[in-house]
Image (cartoon, rainbow, N blue to C red; front, side, top):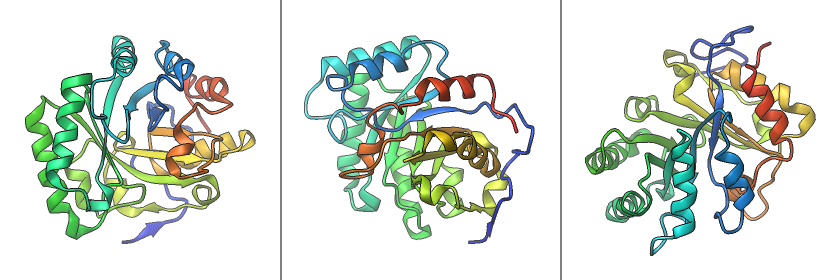
Length: 252
């Protein structure tokens, strides 16, 4: 796989203001633990592309009324709610994944799915395609995000709405490189999740996302204490500032 350092992917370029940059919230804590966060996400004007609902590492074992209420509030403001499906880097049995997807749909009426820890290799593509085909038989036009967390084999881009091509700490993101093949796709196809971003480096982080052609982002000053998921459980301390920058259209 070839890479280009500091080269824009897709249509990103200095001074561009039409990339429709917005947020994808990958793992806010359960509404019982984070009620104010869910209420804030449901406020109008937040440039949210979608929010992931992760009840208990998936849909849980029974319907949760608090999660149903939180998901409904988001949908009422026009925000997609995606069910969390953990592929465990390809080790999760197909039947378990589809069973979780059915419960997400039956209990929470989700609009699509984030396939977390999605494998990225060429040899795994066939099984991921099988999973995606099954998901599309369960509901009409689900929005599907593949959570690779790195640049996958390019063929994955043909089978999902969006790919997460970076998920990790700011210390890695600020020096990251973009895969050359991403230039064949618009920025709306790519997502970046970055934790540990200091307030003073927000402008730099937004520049990296724009140069690399990722229109869906989640930047936070949270850190991965017990695992990467911990970093996404709350809103960043500079949430209002970040919302203001995205809402006005970030330009260079």
